[in-house]
Length: 128
Image 1: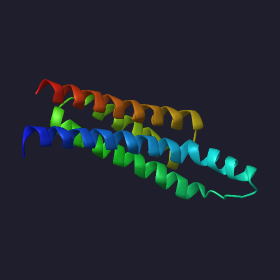
Image 2: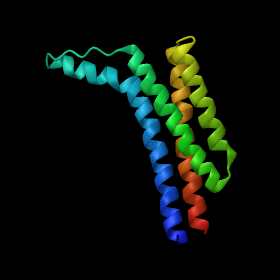
Image 3: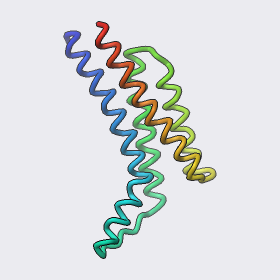
C-alpha cells in the first residue's frame, strides 16, 4: 500500500466519522422535523422513542469507533477523548436520566470531535 493509498484511506475514515456524527444528530433532531414536514402533507409518522434512542446511541458509538481508527493513525488524543465523552454523555442521557440540553451538548461534542479528527487527519496527510 503506497502512502497515497494510506492517506486516502485515512481521509475516508475521517469523513465517515463526520457522517456518522451528523447521522446521530439527525436521528436525534431531524426525525422531528421530518415528522412535522410529513404532517403538513397529511402523513403521520409515529416515532418510537426506544428505536430512536438505539439509533442515536449506535451512531454515537460508531462515530467514536471511527475516531479511534483515526487516533491509531495520527496519535492525537484530543478528538478521541472528546468523542468518548460525547458518546458517554449521549448514552447516559438516553438510558439513565433524559435531558434535551445535556443530550444536545453530547451531540455537539461528538460533531466537534469528528471535525477535529478530520482536521488532524488532513493536516497529518499534508505533512507526509
